Image (cartoon, rainbow over all chains, first blue to last red):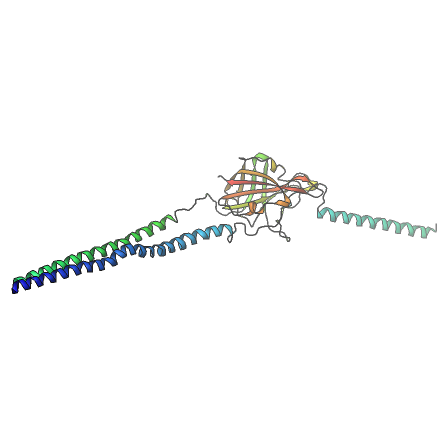
Length: 129
Length: 207
């Protein structure tokens, strides 16, 4: 009797343990199976985090910096001139040098005429004509 | 009694071992996941810096001569800056005028648009150094002699005549990905004092 009772008890304990073990395994594997499937969510968390950090901070930051660099800040031409360059002087126009020499010539001619008139007047006065 | 308890312990131990094996598998699979992440992240990182362009740019050196064999240009090059009104300075009006490099642009051969200007006519002195610039065609050669003794050789890609009122500053002075050269002079219809248009030669470094 005792033997049967004890063996039945042992079997029951074994069965309980065996059932709890899978339950435990299921519970423990629910965490791991969630970790594998939640590791995807955990991998999603790391993958967006590490790949978002490397891809955003490494690919968008460096790739945005050169593109921003090429368009804005480090302009290859340090100072962009305004308007169009005036790289042609036609014969009709005169340079400032020509203008100054013209003015100087006109001034000298006026002085000569004035001086000549002064001499003529003085001569007329001295001769009494 | 003892044999029964042995059996019971053996059964319990077997069940515990089975449960332990199941749990162990879960931890190893989750341990594989971080390894994949670790392998995917480094493989993503090297791919990003591998997209770098190689340009045959030259070291910075100021241009001192300019040769354009197709139109018989062989001239010294002076340096030009900005005028007080913000426009680009132009070479002086002299009998034997020279070309001028805009010193706020890259030197010929550096990555970017290097800008060289010259007169088409110099008033009473007659033709300017860039008198026949508009005759250049695609494929013509331009050689810029640099201060360090090297020569930057360019090939003409485009010759454009544009109205001064619509001068394409972005295309002339804007950033580019390779070493380029712009030769600029006046052209088009003459007015009393100058010209209505600009002739712009776009060229790229080829040697």
